[in-house]
Amino acid sequence: MQNLADFAKQAAERVEAVEGEDAEARAALGLLAEHGLLAHTVPARWGGAKRAGVDEAQVSVRSLCEVRQQLAFASGMLDLMFVEQGLGSYAISLGGKGDWVQPLLAAVMAGEEISAFALTEEGAGSDLNAVSTEGKPDGGDWVLNGSKTFITNAGIADFYTVLVRTGGEIGERGGLSMFHVPADSAGLTVKRFEVMAPHPIGEVHFDQVRVPGEYLLGELGQGLDLALAVLGRHRTSVAAAALGFSRRALHESLTHLDQRMQFGRPLSAFQGLRFDLAEMDIRLRAGELLVGEAAELLDQGLDAASEVARAKWFATESASWICDRAVQHLGGLGVKRGQIVERLFREVRALRIYEGTSEVQKLILAKHLITQHRDGAKNHG
Ligand SMILES: Cc1cc2nc3c(=O)[nH]c(=O)nc-3n(C[C@H](O)[C@H](O)[C@H](O)COP(=O)(O)OP(=O)(O)OC[C@H]3O[C@@H](n4cnc5c(N)ncnc54)[C@H](O)[C@@H]3O)c2cc1C
Image 1 (cartoon, rainbow, N blue to C red):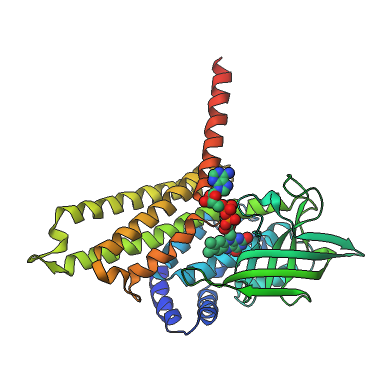
Image 2: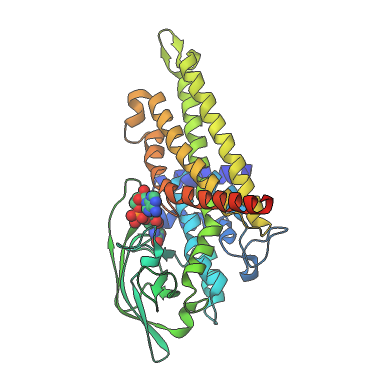
């Protein structure tokens, strides 16, 4: 991964030199494509990167995690633009049918088509059964109406992969379907807003947006399963990104504490701060082991819902703590705009919220523990 680390460092410098969030995002994507990294976001069966032992219809979670750890160490924008290409296109890789699929996925890998994944709505966050954006059949087409919010890449995306209600009742399980929607479709509009760290994001509105029948992904009514399959493959990599940000924070702490003199000694001589460094390292290492375990099981094609939940919860929660300690270690400099730790502190926060909040990860894990316990009790009873 040395080559990747060098690339990430140089690419981060080039991205930082660009003015404006959208321009930064596009610059990051171009560099990722040039380096061939976007091939990891598409399964081998569609021309993406192969990894021994991994089903060719899937992407390798270990590869996603390895790349994200290195990119996040260097630049949040590089990391974001890398993973979003996979998140937004993966439902197409899994469930796309028709002649349009292959060229689109090739364009995703070339960084020529920017992708976005649109699940969340004002009334449907953790509870996706509450999705109300509606799709109605019309001739051979589908007509979409409704709104999505918190959509990464809103406004710069060339297409949106959208979860839509095509049947059933709002709040009940079932009746959701997934569609591919080109960004230039008539009736599709975007309203941007800002979050606390650089991140192209906004609302996407659908007003009588017409898409052809062949843009239905997977089976009608199976959209939630498809969305969960996408998240199941990518969630561990959120934990990996958290590790990348955390490792950078530890690096910044070590560098500063060893250089900064107070009371006639470098700050790294003080035991209280040494304890912090040790704990940052322990949390990082524990996170790496949890991420490695989940990614390995997923790449073997095994169910790893509880391992993924543990990894995502631990690595993202620890990242906030680790980055907070790094801010503290830099003293006043820690909160000064332009400092790396100040940026890291803001960048890691959203990782505890998107792709399943920390609370949702605990609910998944607890459900698994209770089922396992009850099954055990039955078998021994
Ligand atoms: C930077 C960023 C980028 C994002 N990008 C995308 C994107 O590209 N596409 C997309 O579709 N979405 C995206 N999201 C949305 C994200 O997935 C949602 O914010 C997330 O799923 C939580 O939904 P919510 O914000 O509606 O919170 P809510 O679901 O309203 O939850 C609010 C709080 O209540 C807690 N909570 C909810 N239910 C329970 C429960 N049963 N038990 C205990 N606690 C509970 C939550 O954990 C949370 O702390 C993004 C969000 C952010 C911040």
